[in-house]
Image (cartoon, rainbow, N blue to C red):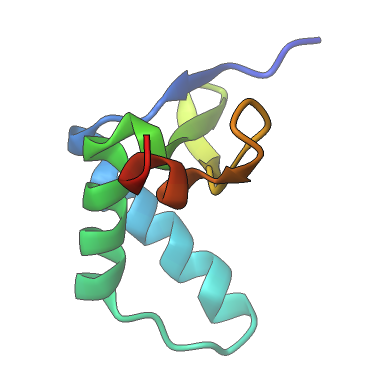
Length: 86
């Protein structure tokens, strides 16, 4: 069985923030929606930072995965550092 997923786009930010809010609410942790919106926007606008994917169940968003990149195996250093010192 496969689970349908697709890479998130800027248009998905409201759905991503809603799912993040639900996840945080389970732990009784407050989520600043403006901060979360800005964070997803920065991530989705810059592939070098990583990406986000939405997981679907019966055609509806059911979860998400976020991957952030901080270390390059090729350069052997922090990804951010390698961008500053090519």
